[in-house]
Image (cartoon, rainbow, N blue to C red; front, top):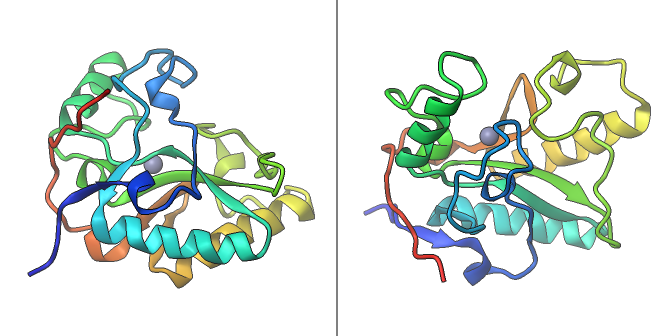
Length: 183
Ligand SMILES: [Zn+2]
């Protein structure tokens, strides 16, 4: 049977950098919606992401995570703050983050500096779309590196958020309200 349990990604690998924006007020909601800054994912999603990170590390880069699994209650909280927009998924349907199958991420270099991806995380406009071609060659190359590496490990992108990836085998998982303990 498929293992659908959740794991804290740092128990698998300490090679990730965590910058969980929704555990701070530094996000588009301007509110902290997580009690603590932990990254949980379905186990197989986490393992695949760890493999992608290992490949990137060999090339001198590393994954920085902005958001991971999001309990349904947190989705409801976000919907309450910003209902009826395209920016927050309706909790009735739930998002891939509620399924533990989506991650928001970027790449950093060996000194920990974020690569230029053309926009910040959670920038909602055409410049964040994968199809936006007017970015510098450097930006396009950085996005390509992220997209191509993740694709190898079965992560698919969505057209309008360069930072958002979904692990294909878990996309159909049930939404969850599993909550982890904060220290
Ligand atoms: Zn996302």
